[in-house]
Length: 70
Image (cartoon, rainbow, N blue to C red; front, top):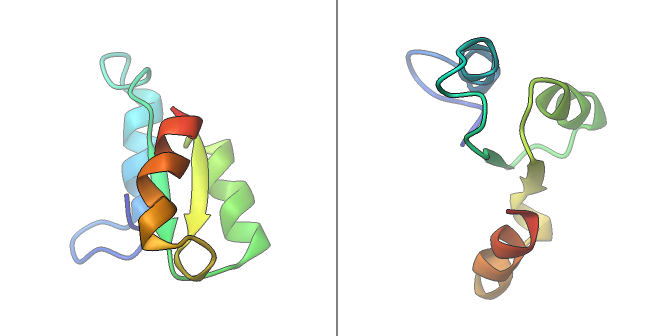
């Protein structure tokens, strides 16, 4: 999930998922370009399993990182 989207931001999407019993158990990983501690904390509080920062994750290791999180 990206945090910056055209119609609805990732925070709003996470809140919808958290509030909907049929979506609550779907694991969500956020991949963002912004390394802002307050946003990472908010993402996790809204139920994301993890928040990965794009410049800290190598493309070759992305799949492995997601497997470890899920």
